[in-house]
Image (cartoon, rainbow, N blue to C red):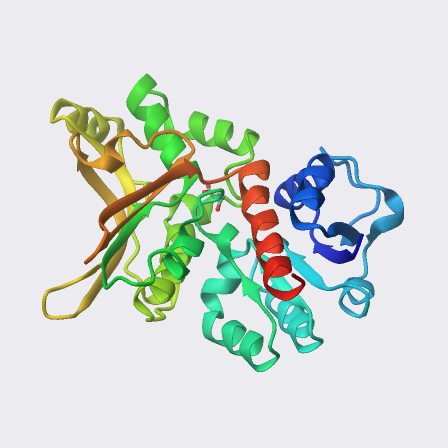
Amino acid sequence: MEQVNIGLLGVGNVGGGTFQILKNNHDIISGRIGIEINVKKALTYSLNEERKIEIPLDILTTNADEILGDSDIDIIVEVLGGIEPATSYMIQAMKSGKHVVTANKAAVAANYEKLMATAKENNVMLLTEACVGGAIPALTSIKTALQGNRFYEVSGILNGTTNYIMSKMYDDGSAYEDVLKEAQAKGFAEANPTDDVMGYDVANKLSILMALTFGKYVSPKDIPTVGITNITKDDIELAKANNTKIKLIGSAVLSETGELGYSVKPVKINCDHPLFNVDNEFNAVYIKGDAFGELMYYGKGAGALPTGSAIVGDIISIINNIWR
Ligand code: HSE
């Protein structure tokens, strides 16, 4: 069977989840697509690091050039996190004719135009489904099934950590710090949770969603952003008494005069809104369009396997487009 070689940049939480899916579902995937997906090399910071997932030592390297310079590697999966060196690695990979799949919303949102232009110039695919909403295939749907529409709104609960924190505070009256620790232990929160709780992670995701939905790139730095750090137990109780829940919402809405308004901020959601029941680590992407009306995608927005699921889906999309 023909083989497509993957170079995995990063074997942490999401990289480990991706490796696990490719290994556990190897036969079912190759049976479906008629091509074998082989992780040829994987970049790690340290060979001796303890890992949740067992990865064969002989594919591990601490040298990115061993992967980026390997002409047998067809697709790079970038899950390092952080803007650099991730962006440079993706650009280097595309310039050498490799396709790229990434879950790195910070790098994609910061350098969206440059990354997309590099993919185009080098005639390779750059897929980013895992950057927004974990397992939820919102970006792919916006790019394909919904393309016949004029879009009016894209909004959502786009961060599992903060939604988990807000849900636990609402349900159990738990303290903010305790719930944050729990979210980190479950692998939802970033190593540095500042990006989650300050809303920066949602701003990155909203920037990518807006670029795809409205064809307008807005740097995350230019999206007015307020996080959840100032929400008190009293705010939550008051919202509850009024049949609302406070949720961190990233939202972009096109006005009747054609102006795009966007923000990331805590919003009181009424009990009759579809986003009201999106709790814990779950995410939802809510879209309005002229033909389909309203749509909401719901699913796990964080974690090794849900995010890995989106990455593996992108790898398969590339294979379906290029190899089959
Ligand atoms: N820290 C992010 C979250 C991970 O909590 O949603 C997924 O992007």
